[in-house]
Image 1 (cartoon, rainbow, N blue to C red):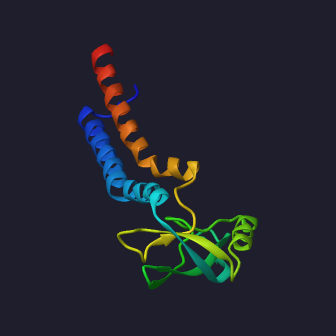
Image 2: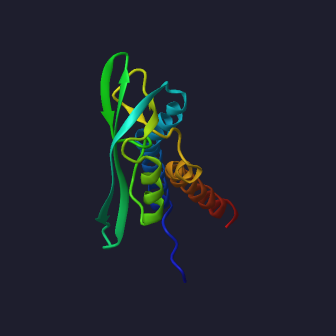
Image 3: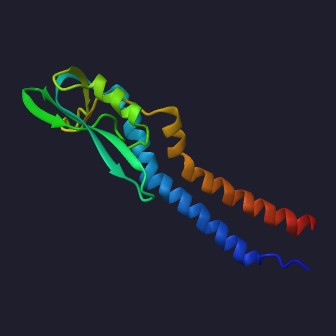
Length: 162
């Protein structure tokens, strides 16, 4: 006879799963998504790329990872700033060709449109918003919440209908 998990154990596991998903979304991924979305409405000034190079590193599995190391200067209300943010969330990739494309777009000396946070002008990006796939990734913690709700529904269904 197959032993089923206890009701209390299932409820505790579902609650922990739900709370972990909700807290991760609320305190980590939601603020990232909100800043990325807000960047679409930030004012724009012209800036100049002062540094552009390909950076190579290794991930935990020893795979080569690449990122674009770009720095640019810009002026807001007479104050000079510099930044290295391409997007609100930058990262590395295993696709070297993608990074080379970015470096070509933002070569040293290139004039660029810099989108800056009007409340904190030292915060700036070259590309606003986020990609569709990254947007989905930011919603992943909500999947934990959904799974926990399904676990509870499944438990009640089993209790009510056998």
